[in-house]
Image (cartoon, rainbow, N blue to C red; front, top):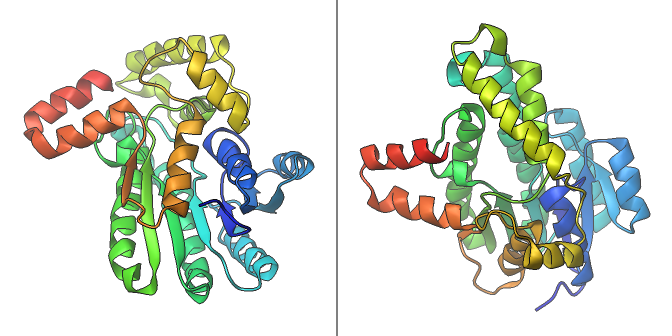
Length: 298
């Protein structure tokens, strides 16, 4: 079953997962409303043929305007919402100021919650539909140096599981996609947030930060990541000789298609091998062994 003109709001479409999914769902016949935070990205997406709306999850006024505009364009009804836009704030927990942690939750949790609650009535009015949350392997197992992001994704996991129970009788399926390592600009943005918000020079973890920055800068300079159209993403994934555990954004698109079009969507979609491994490990390993595994991959 394809989109057949049904409408989906996809957030965070400037690049990476959101970009590929927006174009991929449009190709399947969905009416896609694609959001981005910056005006330049909105203009670019619009020029590529997508219906667009501006959204900054960290700004409640922007969230309200986005929801109002979507409801205006859809006549008060909506078939699906894909909450995807987010960022990662690296840093040891002791190096995170309350304001830095608060900002992470504003963008990754509170903004998602606000937008979702504003749109649930429209999905209910449509007779049911789908809410799909782009979570993370770090919503399943915590890893070092990612405390703020871990916490935001654990929160999304809990809220989504609760909504799934509460909205079942309304015919609204709530699904979570846990991608793991995916080609995107996510790491580049995360490094920028580390430099902007963490006092690395005065941290007891200074040497570790410097080591990680050296590694990440080398990776990012060697492998720029332009936004990928679905066909380009699939072709690159098929021929890429990079790490076998990393997939392209097309892998998330495949899960989104199932979550929105299947008569029986899954509550959780584990995309990459690390996510499958960590989800299994969380269920079967004692905490000491799980800590060793998480420490190895942090």
